[in-house]
Length: 223
Image 1 (cartoon, rainbow, N blue to C red):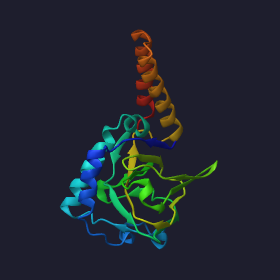
Image 2: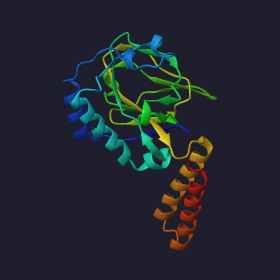
Image 3: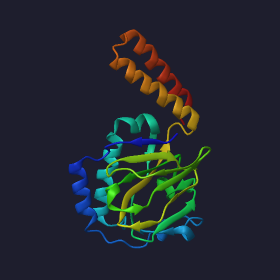
């Protein structure tokens, strides 16, 4: 299941993020790519060992986890550190699939889902779409600054070449308590239905039965 999360970052948040990003150095992004993806990755990436970068990672990650749809869509057990990427004209990230396991030692996680938080106004650059392959063909994603896109990490995807302007984004991965995509989607649909029924004034007893079913399915499927 792929999903757009709107307004992960508000206008004030984006101003803070933009100011911070303007102060970062931007070495090559190849150093964090897996062996298979390194040859097709051509972008710049903030140095994650710098304290200011770590602080901004936490700020954006906390905002993502507060989004009302993130919890029910991802059922996150763990969220990776974020990578801040920069694409200047001519830069691209060719077709690849993410490593199934990322990190080292106790920090290693299974990448069930990937996400991109867009940090530059869509009108400020040309190209740079996140293109994700599915059974229905390729889907090009280019969202407004502050919006995020979450999708299965095992899909083949690429970032189209930027032809003008600068594309800025934060990317990361989620290890879900519910690794099975179909089960996770079922829980998402039930949770959305529960919210809509509550807003429509459904009886508390009916909502309680739905809560019971969602909780019991989560108990059954969580790993």
